[in-house]
Image 1: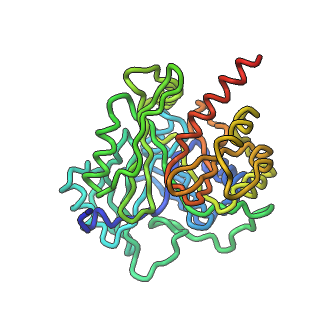
Image 2 (image 1 turned 90 degrees about the vertical axis):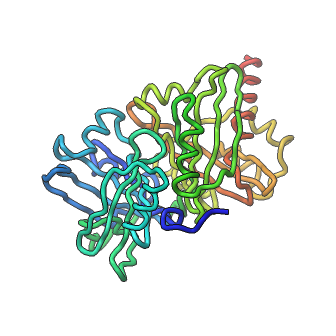
Image 3 (image 1 turned 180 degrees about the horizontal axis):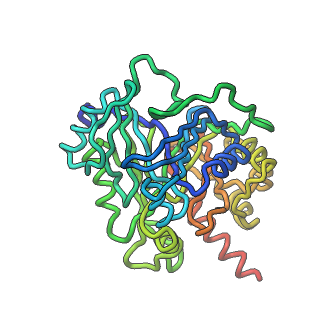
Length: 362
């Protein structure tokens, strides 16, 4: 059982992306995914450099896109190394000073000592993989607007209306991370040791000559899950190796956004211009034999190319966007859970088998 301490009581605040163009990045989330810009920040000079940030929200998901305006801001070095990507998974704290001290006492790597500004207290520790960080955020007393994520942000007086039908994304389901071979235990152990996360899933997934080790760890509050993947030493590195090479290190390769109706969400995202990965018809021919669907029809899934899987708790439905990143790294997942608590491992195998079967027919 997890000890209840300041470091284990942290919850998700927001996810920050470092980008080359904040306006363009924000527009992509607004136009394609149905987010709304709700706050902005301009930070000038100083030791941490100058930057421009926009905060976006949809239901319980808050994203921040930050562009460096000079070479001293950390976003400049991050983008030079990785391209646009997820740099900070920020965590809300009732007392950031206590949470920081507790995390460091549990061997968290400190990055920024607690500092106070306008009633906010922030600090930062390293994440369990490469140069991603966790900013700890303590809001001023009585501050309840979660769309304003950090000190220095000003709420947008009249947020623009989102064009088109609402997409219906609800919360951040999980964060998927790739780490180099041999670092899986170290990365997941960091979260278990420092933040009291629990292991909820573990599997070696083999696909032909490729394989990846995977383990998912979840926060005590249940609102943040990391699925961490590493190439298996006995197999080819495959697409994980490709990500590590293109990204320049380990890091977040996708965010999974939850929805309560994936068929509607995907349909509305397609109307907005989002392109999803394709799935061969063979997958759906075999899916009819593999699963008895408890919601959505086979025709609906086939039309939208949505994947379905099942575990002891129920079913899940998921689909992945095609990456538009210049390095072909970061992408996004849309997921609907109908009782399932896993992450679609059965789909990895089923998709591989379907692709192989389709190749054999041609």
